Image (cartoon, rainbow, N blue to C red):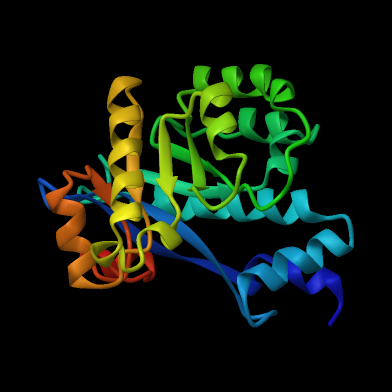
Length: 236
């Protein structure tokens, strides 16, 4: 398969998974999830782009298409909702990134960039000016997969995100695990103190959902709440 096939707009799309406010039981927004007919899984597509030193290109193309899709379909139902889009750290630091963001003609106050920590971040201090400019545009910042590795706490302190998303491994079977419950409660206390919104990811079973509600987790995402679907499917 030629690498150029991956960069044809029609070869990929996005499904959108809702993120719910648990006490109000309504979506606050939707996460755009990359889907491609070129590779079997999304990670394979981005790994292929990375192998050819074109990761930032695919990342920006994906973000741009997600924004266009969401904006075009922002009916009354979606107008007050936020769009969560994943982005690699190397893309944030690439010289093409800020010009790309400045070129967006749409209101970006509904956009939340989820920083994917699958890449090692060499120096968080390099991010300061870029994140400040994003915030001036109205863009919100989320840290994804918090609790999965050892860099999460440092990233939270230095990057001061608007959202943190607790990794699914801490959600799975948490109703049977006191240590996981204690971590979630501590994370909640931290977020309340510093005005950070916490999202619990990977809720796949009703027991996990009921635990999240009992712990007063504000926001959650997962199959027990809503499946990824084309955006207009959510308007049914």
